Image 1 (cartoon, rainbow, N blue to C red):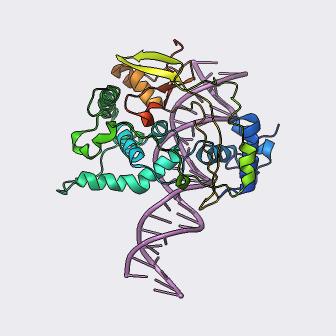
Image 2: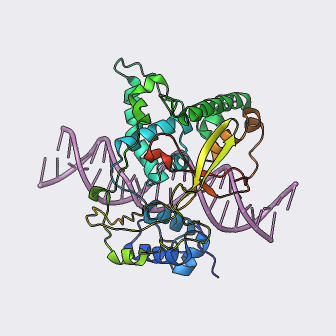
Image 3: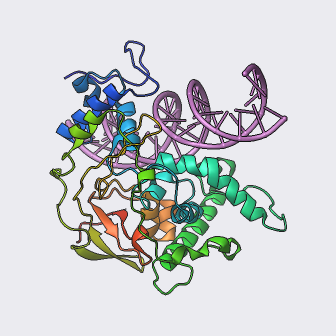
Length: 330
DNA sequence: AATGATGCCAACCGCTCCTCA
DNA sequence: ATGAGGAGCGGTTGGCATCAT
């Protein structure tokens, strides 16, 4: 079995830049046969002159079924704003709340649209905006002493817990715990309307054979995934006084395609995205540990890597949030 | 119509995390 | 306990598209 080309290795001719339809077909064919994962084998097995990382990225950000493209809806926008306020620039975690969007898409959308919008809003009608809103990013840590950083983290954890607690409370008028000065967005708690993939959101394949290649691959469940209807297997987990209804994510996907791509993009639109891959590590740490241990010690590796769905109390759009199971006890 | 400025986004890079031997 | 290698994440970049002048 050949070694996969590293992304930077003089001895390998690694192709970079935009992917061609032919490369996409090769990658999709591989995933169809083997499932996503084991990316290091992909270049050797497919003959692609790409590094494994590039293959994974292309799949997760572009070719993976279930990705919605096109404009973000108002609801999605509000969710991103709330989640960014809550989680910081943890795009993967934010993306897990928007199953049809990739972290890259959300990150780009934030950087190109929302950041400006937020700045404008925070400046407000009175123009009292005093600078960049502090974000709980890891990079900000480097400018603080350890003590400062730990205190800041403790505060962040407390705020995050409170916000999540609020978010999970059905009766709470402001479920994401958004500060009042951002009440322009507090209607997030209204039930989210399901956004069916409209023709405008669907991108045609410029290579229809990809659609044929993909047809049915998601219908075949992967070995590790249970096939069942969404929400039929509901559990309850508790941690630090917070508890959640959870249900095993369904895995009943179909792939569909439509015409009208403005670019060489393929829209793969299953009813459900692939299972799992929640990346709410930080959130999980906040939930699983008390403040002191969260600050002083890293979280023990989690034994169970299964994925759960959180039953969020405010509408369909938020109800299917991936959440990595914290324990084996369910 | 030509040209420069700006916006957008797919892809890359470098780092950290995770797993496993 | 530890180190190596793979996977994943967030920041950044490069190039194309669109807009403004």
